[in-house]
Length: 74
Image 1 (cartoon, rainbow, N blue to C red):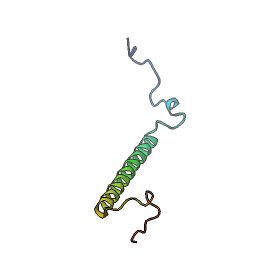
Image 2 (image 1 turned 90 degrees about the horizontal axis):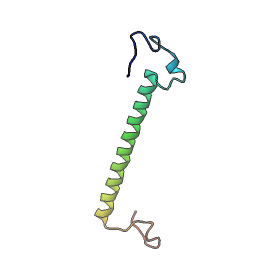
Image 3 (image 1 turned 60 degrees about the vertical axis):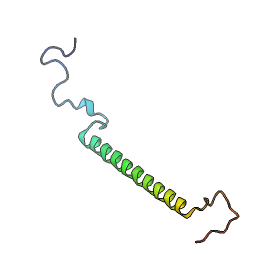
């Protein structure tokens, strides 16, 4: 059985659960903001990679690290 008798369990506004501060509202919100920033950064990096890949395919030039002895236009 789950739950228990009315009035059993931890007292209201029990601060014991917040010993480290990991589960406070502020910490949870901060972790969400950081996760959103990481997602935005990853999306931005992917967009840059796609743009560079399109530019490379448009120029039809091999990548610089594949042929070190070629002269590339700057």
